[in-house]
Image (cartoon, rainbow, N blue to C red):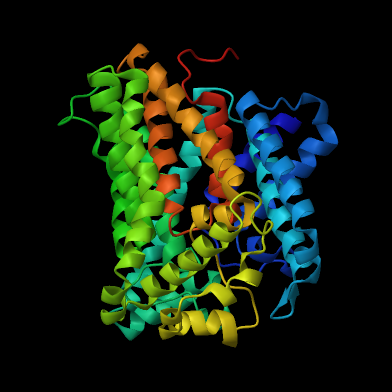
Length: 449
């Protein structure tokens, strides 16, 4: 009975992924706006209290979690004085360390409990892909009154009655006319969800169309993917475009190099530019920041300024960083002079009574956990990509496991590239994907019931 209840709750948690604008419980900090985390909290509590003896952590997830938590403690011990004495905008370094650590531990716990529900490919389809498709359709339905609100007062009224009820921020700070947010808090959130969902909408299409020719495949099977791409484009967010680019790259890598040319692990050489882009694209942009300033691109200026500060902190603390969650306490002195041309930077560091965001996950990890932290985070995904590359040529083309492996590859690259402008630690999508990756990346035979 507990297994059935847990499975239904996991289904609901996935279905609620796009809802990120709740007022929530203040004590949960940056997690409070996500509807999914409240359901996952119940799943964690249920698992710990009734099924703790049945928890089996996949080896790759266990090694990752153990290494990351040990290194987090090591960097905290090394930077304990700074953590205990730092203050900024009314927040203490210790408070931020504690809340950031809670977010990380909650995410790892979510990944662990979700592994119980995703043991087989059929489980992934039933409890992850199907609710994700339902969430895409729900976002599309709620997007209709919002799009109408761009063109008429009647549409605005309809929006207030429907979608607007889910956006609890004062004056709807996350809403920007002309940029779709649907059920999410703001356009980048919707873009991130759609980018995350695209590989799995494609997976669902392949499962339903595998016995049909391309021209005779069911039209409805491809509708969720089409809707996800349209909403991603209407959100007008670079995050979604980066994630879509990651999916396209993964598809080419898998079908052309891993399967078509059967290069196996040699195909991983094509991955190097993607990982290089994580650092060198922002770095190259920093070398040409004058063009960004001339274009009055405030958002890009803000993100480049924060990345510049992260690189400076990393250069000064390349091994142990400054401690988890501590970037905001060390950023001000190393911000470049041009950063103040952005009103967002002024708001983050002088106006708003809060810590600045981090955005780039590579920059954050480098600044806060040093090079070992970067290696731990990316090694999990690199190992998964390696396992997929080894299995690719051994799977039947129409095998569900083949479709699952390419979906995992697409999701991994989407997550990696999306991390250039987003912090994945606070997003439940990251940890749910981590559960599936740890169970199925590179799998060539189905698990028994």
